[in-house]
Length: 437
Image (tube, rainbow, N blue to C red):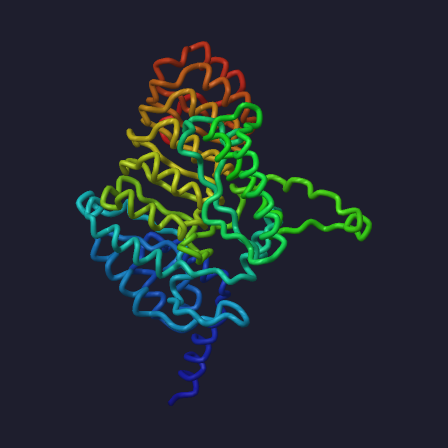
């Protein structure tokens, strides 16, 4: 071979290898809408493969439901044993599932979005991505949150009393304990026996504290039992002098439920799931039923952006999702005619980090939901209640005054919002009407 040709080939090869990885990444990011071009880059060479593979799997695009089927099949077949933490058993996990951050099905045609098979495919993809978190990560998330819960302690699962109205304030609403076995120790058993003896003695003499009814007594006993279990599993720190004096224990501090880690209770087992998924777009995907979303709710806890516009979602579905999505920042529930003030109140009381909320054409929304938004979403920057005939000046004024960071408050076609209120929003430099949200 001619020496000149060898030098030319060597020079060409070294020029390609000298391209910085950062420059390759910028080029591949421009090709994100073109999945075929990115796939060709992945197959070019090993160096390009290392840079282009995360870009290809970060935001997959689907044109037909057959592409979703192939995508789910690839996650099921390309799996291997992955060690998540020291001392933990390895789990089977697809190496590509940890690269997915966004799932969007809005590019599918309408027949594919309404296909019930789409719910099965979504269930497969989410299950491939969700992994049970190790106890070390659970403790780190708990302590970083500031709630002070230890992973070894019994988590408190609270449910609302059925005799109370759903529209009451969550802060003043009593709760009853569910699924809380007593710790197996002598101190708790003796205390519990004494408490039960006192209750029996009170019933024997027919005394009722404060003239309370039988339902109030049972509710109070359930609350006292909850505090007793919490005190037994979390003994307070005391000095030797306090122990010698045998001072009575002070009542435990109130429990925090909205900032707790995502815990799924199945019998006596508790699991915390983690995933790389951050954004999920299911707008007008009627094939994904409400019960499918409720079943996947614990495994969607890492979402920060959720779009459920036009999907016939109900209050129960939104309430179930809100029990797990504490990291949610943006959510769209537009064109959801079944959504009422109860669903919005449950959402904002648990997901208090929401910054952008779209309630366009939610015809059953009224000022009750606006007051719940104003009192819970202090980081709110954008809200759309366009075409909501039940919203009045009172609710709009409450949001504009209680949310200092709000800059967009779309009240287009709100018949009960007067022009005087719109001018007041303009004086506060708040956009009162916009075409796209």
